[in-house]
Amino acid sequence: MSHLPQEPEPEKAQEKAHPPHGEHGRPLSGSERWAGFKGSPFFPACVLVLILSAAAALFAGSYTYSMANPTPHNIPTGVTGAYDQAQGRKFLGAMEKALDAQLDLKPYASRAAARDALDAQKIYAVLDVRGGGSRVHLDVSGASGVTVAQVFTEAAAPVSKATGIPVTVKDQNPLQGGDPRGLTIFYITLAAVIIGFVGAIQLSVHARGLNPAERIAFTIAYALLGGFAVAAVADWGLGAVDLPFVESWLILALTMFTCGMVFTMFNTFFHRWAMIPTWGLLVLLGNPASGGAVAPPLLPTVIGRLGQWLPPGASYNAQHTAVYFQGNQHAFPILVLAGWSLVSCALFWFWRHRHPGGRGTGPLHAAPV
Image (cartoon, rainbow, N blue to C red):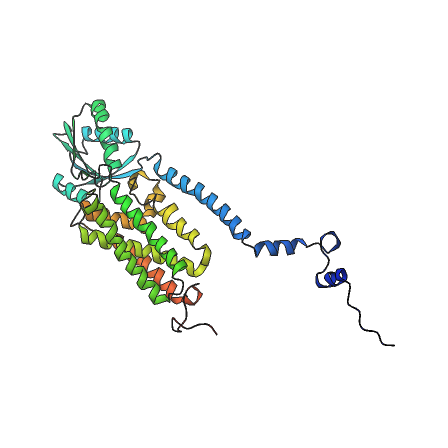
């Protein structure tokens, strides 16, 4: 007698479909739990919590270390007249003591020649010793660095009293009325730096399909338009500073393009973690070392020198010279920006196959098969 196959009992069928779990199943090993955690969204979230906490501390530390207590170190200073006679040496020694810094003395044949060097930003002040040391003329340049001009000016009266030598102080290059602390140039440079790499981040998120040449072209586009907007607001909109508009616009645009391509370069190699080296280079190190908020002679020596080779420092120097020392623009800061742009573009282009964006060579409307 044949028997029809019996249906498995519901509980046994369910047990067969789903292996036993809980206290009756095999517990996951440590490596399996770790692999599951790494594959979950909780892993990058936890990493970001640690990174953001460290970034906050480093951000505060870098700016505080560079700017909280600006101290003179080695200040390039022009000297003319009887600076090498007894009274002149006496005054210079008292000035170094009052500044608690060493003056990097650069002799000039005349006060006019020293002023030319001041305009060329080779020196930060001029000490003209007259009448065999019976009087001193101190020329400072607020536009070269308001903090340096301030420490010289504040030291002049006590030194005059201590040495008995009268001192006359004059600011040969005062700041513009709408920029009393000289920070407007620093702020517009900071805006160009941050929007420059944030723009590249947004392209990587919202325009991920751009091919390499298109990505560079759109970086140029937002840099040109963004630089124009920053210059227009600072000059035409707020009247904070009278810019040589075209030159300032192009410096801001070059800054934004450079910072955008720096992120794109890092994105090629570090992918989703590209923000870390970008932030470290341009914000944690570059901005406080730029000399915008505190003049380079008052920054820690290494930071003050290094800052001139980074995009924020180069941008500030070029913009600062364009605004306050027209006709004395130096090639160095422009070459620094151009060098960072060229290297970033070259590395991105050469290893473009590693960049997480792009759509290949197919038409935009083509759908995957």
